[in-house]
Image (cartoon, rainbow, N blue to C red; front, side, top):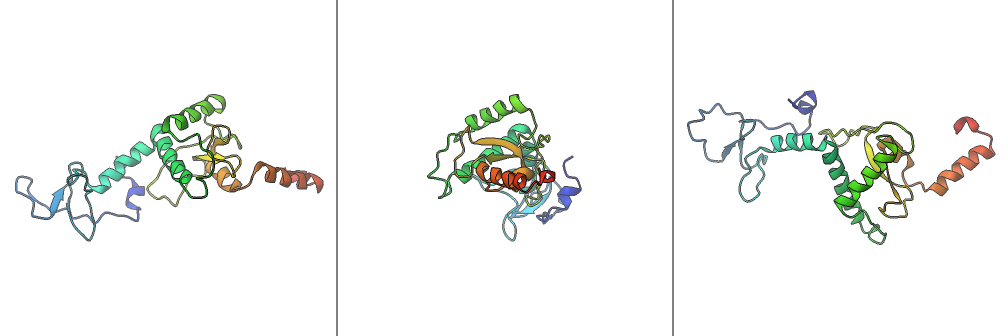
Amino acid sequence: ALRSMEWYMNPFQPDLINLDIDPIVQLPDGYKRCSVCKNVYPLRKPNFHFRVNYGWSHRCSYCVTERDLVYKNTERGYMVNLFNDCLKRQRRPKMKEMTHTLKTKESFLAHWESQKRQHGWRCVYSGNIMTMIKGLNKASKCPTNLSVDRIHPAMGYTETNVVFCCWYFNDAKNFMSPKMCKKVVEYCEEKRRYDLL
């Protein structure tokens, strides 16, 4: 049901080799049938259609991607994926020196639940309702999607420094600290540009 137009516009369109083979007859060497979509793919190059984890997987990589996409579009799946991204950032050389308290999945999800009780699904900065939409194309991000923002970019991922806001606001704020934001506001007030505030 998920294979909508977005699936077929995916740049990683499967190299489908749907052999019309009688299921009773054994498949030729070097081919395998997916247990979900029932399509037949080659096991070797040019494309690896089945993942190898202690033997060939039963699902083709496209059915696995589709299953993962369904999970990532749930609240828990989206938040776990967001946590994994934050964990990767915490391990960067520049960020290893910072103090991080949101190192476990449990603490990260508890922090989200805490903010959700106070603000609901609204962005703490803009007040817009946040969404959790994951697509196949990583380049196209939904501007209202929930993202993790460190209030002060020079501090780590802690309960007092991390808020959940919409992606568009987070991207626009970038590496600006609260002090820098205040300087912009003060400049506008000094020049009497209240229309910008």
